[in-house]
Image (cartoon, rainbow, N blue to C red):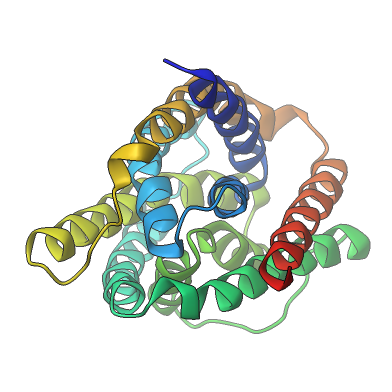
Length: 256
């Protein structure tokens, strides 16, 4: 257990703490940190989703215990998210990581802008409306697989924009994420076993993944409670600035 474990445990703890309170940021922050440490996009996404299977389950239990979950919404989001995540995984594993990496970094930067926009408005934006949560889950799952973090920013923001109760939107999004992460991880495994994808030696990232899992599991129960007691606007500003900063950092690394 080297220094990498403790570094990523701290990252996983902070990311899950904010993700559980805001309904976003775990995947975005974790993926950006992995990319910044030279992990290829597909391997970064696979690592983060492997961690999210465990942290997502812990978060789901916490939000269910605090009654932050709408069960019908959970079912529809999960079904759409699983389908979108599977499709997105095959798209990601079919493309050379060096080619897609700039687009992934751009997507993460865009997510940071979206988060900051929410903080600046101080109200729930309505970028577009959805007739059903299923297509929302489909889009969220696809971008989550391709970018390694997009489920929360896409799904939570849209739910809040369409007038959903913040507590239910955040709790249900976090609970559904466990199913989406499990489906994406299973698809990565199938792609690896079938020869559709070469992982690029993911064993070297084992301690990083274990750190993300450990830190996230510790933070999940606290985050479920935080939904009820902490002001979301201040946390939104912090997350947006952090994500954009990390995206800019990785973008500069790509250029130089």
